[in-house]
Length: 88
Image (cartoon, rainbow, N blue to C red; front, side, top):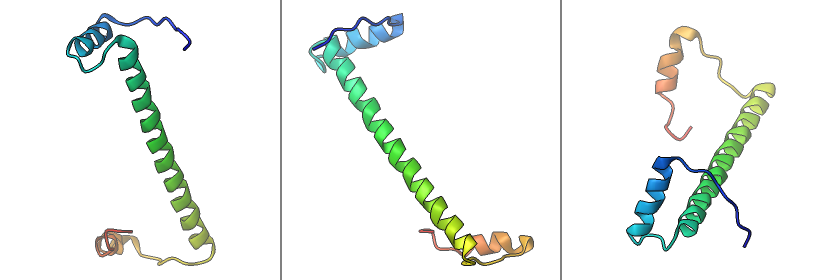
C-alpha cells in the first residue's frame, strides 16, 4: 500500500489517538481509511441527490414547454400549494 504523510492539527491528532486508544480502531491508518470511506459514501449520496434534482428539473421544464402546468394567480398560490399532496 502506498504511504502518504499528512499534517494534522493538534485536535485531529487527539481525535485519532483517542479512537485508537479506545480500541475502536487498531491504528491511525485504519481510522483514516474509515474516514475516507465515509467521505466517499457521503459524496456518492450527494451526487445521487443532485442527479435526482436535475432529473426533476428536466421533467418540470419539459412539462412547462409542453403546456402541462396549472397557472395560479399569485393571490391564490399559498392555498394552491397547501392543497398539494406531500409526495409532489
